[in-house]
Image 1 (cartoon, rainbow, N blue to C red):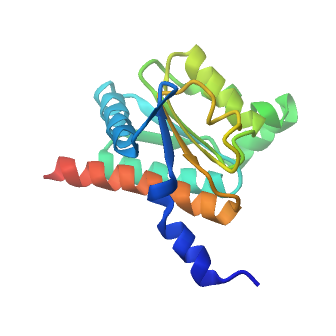
Image 2 (cartoon, rainbow, N blue to C red):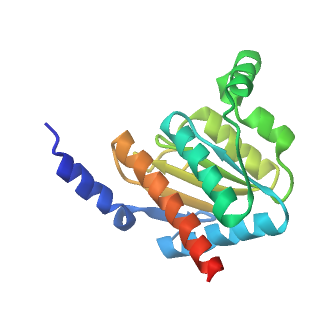
Length: 191
């Protein structure tokens, strides 16, 4: 049996194991947080939106943190996980287009996309990352598991990678990383 205390200890070391890239260059996590804050401030300043995309547990994280960004940072912040929208897109265009198809119609210059995939290889999330580049949107990616995954190696403004092999650790880790970004920016701006 896996020891729950060991699991929690691993969770506690996430900040020490998180890898960060800015524009493809490996940097300290603090530099990544500074860039995330810049992207969120710039998106708000342009009256843009932050678009959050993820599957399963990552989708739930997106829904939660989209609300936090709206509430704490006063930035438009939206998910594309409405059940009717998702089933329509999946039925008519395939699951790979479930997020990118509506994002193409809704996103505007000055917006930012936060793309989360534990495996880093979910094609529907990769499609959103591709679209963000095509539309010149800000792009923040979070992935885990294997450093050869597509999302970690995708061109982005900020890429965060957790070298963890369990979904639960990856998901809670991604949520903690984003909570830290939002809450610290909120507290800094609140003064």
